[in-house]
Length: 352
Image (tube, rainbow, N blue to C red; front, top):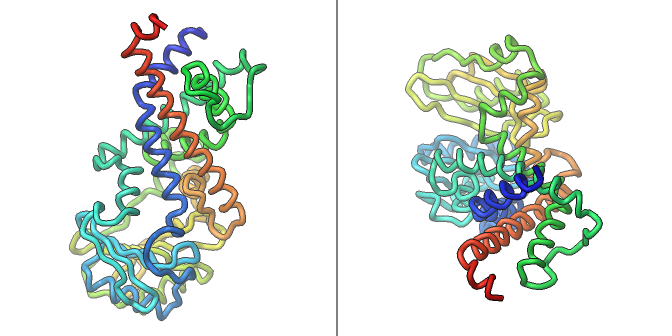
């Protein structure tokens, strides 16, 4: 069994290690995105009047959605069709605009991390890479246990020899096992929805989940009255902060407002309202009263991105995931290098 585990671990690492290294490095950079985006920010939430100004400015760009500013990222982020987007200030000024993910480093990194620059297919691949990373950690711990007496706290190999690299790979994987399991497991569950549904389903009754996932009916199209819409959202949830406005994809669709209530971990909240243009509420979902399985799924993104709203745990979690991301980059890169060096140059090894 040990020989089989070693074979599976080594071959999978050689085949997908580079993909894991890409995910680790890009994810690490995205953890600190608000600190290096080259646009002036005012790190605070928008007031009611500023939200109306931002929405009016966004509507002139024909948006799909807008994420309002927050204390974490002090710009309004506008989504446009075909991968475009824009940044808008609190006073409605257009600070930056792009037409594709290739136009800005943060959008390119986001697409690389989430889709591997391959669209929906790449997103599925990244989810399977997360599962592979989870498998590596489990099998690596099983292979390490009999040799635990030789463990050393060493972040880098002592020498660039295959033996030293393999030993460092083993010990580094053990050192970072917990944060790597957190990052890989939450990432895989976020992307692979059927897997997440299967894992979380035992937490709630099937009837509760069907009721929660019920879709709102269509409504008559009308020009949005934004003061009335925001007032309707405040009336429904006086303690909530409006975070995202989503315009309907089809004629006759409903406007969608995402809100965050104080008890929610998600920085943009998962409480959702579907409204007609005149502020008439058609349907609502209160994330606080959601089934247990849904509340568990809503915790995946805050843990994966180290963005637990209004929590002092966000910074230490971000630091821990940063170390794990850099470690995954090193583990994946060295795994590929040692595996293919051994596979492609066996004669040279035998000669030595």
